[in-house]
Length: 122
Image (cartoon, rainbow, N blue to C red; front, side, top):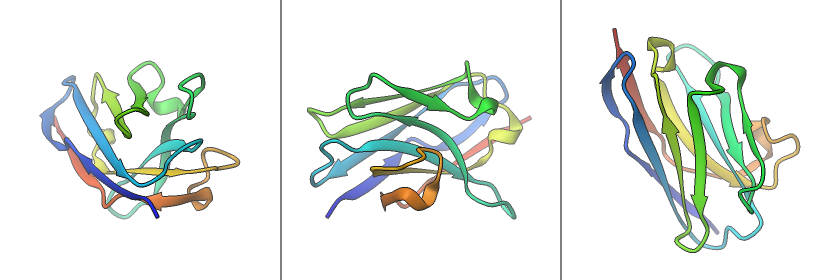
């Protein structure tokens, strides 16, 4: 069993940066860590993912060049660095781990955190 806890959300201004953290307890060896978000009235959407060995990262087109995932397997943590934030980035952000195929499909992830709210004010 894996338990995930996100933190780091908040209210920021357009153009600001924010780093979300995901702390895991339990065995996450070999998993891919994904980040998803859900805005009010919208479906949950893929944001980014990072492979276990940090060798591969994946992005939704809307965040390419602005968001960067990372993970520290020794500490069993992950992070999502978000730069140049926009109002459309406002959502609840979730981290998840699993062995997804494809990495962008939320149904392929086995464990989820409770989410953290990010609000970008214009």
